[in-house]
Length: 495
Image (cartoon, rainbow, N blue to C red):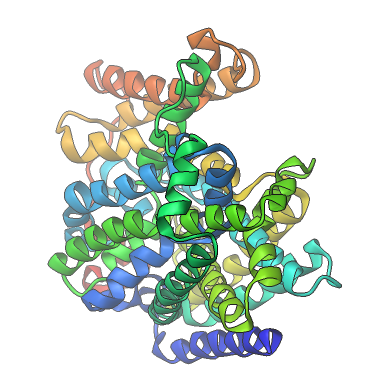
C-alpha cells in the first residue's frame, strides 16, 4: 500500500512537470515563469524552496540530538534571509526586470564581476542540490532496503531532472503548490498522531525542556558561540544573493505580490519549521532506542531516525502522509536547486563568453546545463558523508564571502564602484581559504582560531569594497543598460 502510494505520487509529480512544459515558449518562461505567478503560487514557491530535505530530516534530527542551540542557521537564519529579501531587496529585484541575479552584477559592476560572482553562486548550489538528492536517496533506501543508498540517490536524481528539464520554473511553480499542501497537511496530521503516542504535546515539550533541548543559546564556551553565530550569519546573509530566491521574487505577477509573497513565505517557513522538530523529538520519546542512529560513524545515518520510526511504529495512513510530505519537500526544493544554477551559468557565464545566440539555442543550453548540474550534484551526493545541514551551510559560505557585500553595497551605497567589487572578491577569497585550511580549529577556545572562516572572508570583503571604492579609480566601468542586456540574449523590451 505505502509503496504503491509513493510510486503513484512520484508519477503524478513527473506528469505535472511535463504538463508545465506546454507553458514554456522561451527562456523567460523557463527561468521566471513569464513573471506572471499570482500570490498563492509565489507564496508556495518561496515556502517550498526553503522547506526541503534538510528541514524535515536533517534539522529535525540535529535538534533531537543536540538541541535548539545547534540549529541557528536553519530555521532562524534561513527565515531571516527571506524577511530581509522581502523588506530590502524584492522591490529592487523586481523593478530591474532581470532574468538572473547575475544580471544585476553585470549592470552594476561589469562583465568580469558578473562572471566571477555567477560562478560562485552557481557553485554554491552543488552542496544544496546534493543535499536534496541525498535525502531523496535516503527516503527511497528506507522504503526499498534492497536498493543501496547510492542507487536510490541516482534514481531520485533522474526523476527530478526529467520534470525540471522540460517545465523549468513553470514545473517548479505548479508542483510547489501541490507539494506545499501535501507538506502542511501531512506533517500536521503526523505531528498530532506521534504527539498523542508520546503522551501528549505538553509531555513532549516538557521532556525536551528537561533535557535542555530548548536552550537557544550555547553554553559559555567560545567555540560554541562562534559556531552558533557563524551558522546563523551564513544562512541569513549568504543565502540572499541566490538565484532561486531571485527567481521566486521576479516570477511574481507584480511588485506587490513579490514582496508579500516572499515575506509571507519566510514567516510561514519559520513557524512551520518547528513541526518536523516536534515530530522528531516525539519519535525519540516514543522509541528512545532510535538514538542509536546518533552513534553511527556515517553522519548521514542520523537523518534516518524519523523515517525509520514512522515506517516501523505508525499505521499505514500515517506512513502515507509522512512520506508524501517528505517527498514533496524534497522534490519541490530539488527542482529549484537544479534550475537556479543552470539559469545563472547560461545567462551570466556562457552568454558573456560566447558569441550572440538566439533564444531557442539558449533554451536548449539551459536544459543541457541542467542535466550537467544534476550529474555533478549526484556524484557529490554519492561520495559525501556530510549531513544535509552541513552541505547547505558549506554552499552558502561561498556566496556569503564572494557575492553578498557587492550586492548590498551596490544597491545601498552610491559610491560603490567596480573597483570596490573587484577588491572585495580579491580580499575575501584568500582570507576565507587561508583561515579555513590553516588556523581554523573548531575545538579551540581562542576566538581567532575558532571563528568560522567565512566570517573572516566576510570581514575582508567589507574592507575590500570600502577601500577599493574610496581609492583613486583604476578600474573603469560605465553602469550598464537593461535594454542592452536584453539585446544580448535577443529578448526584446527588457523582458
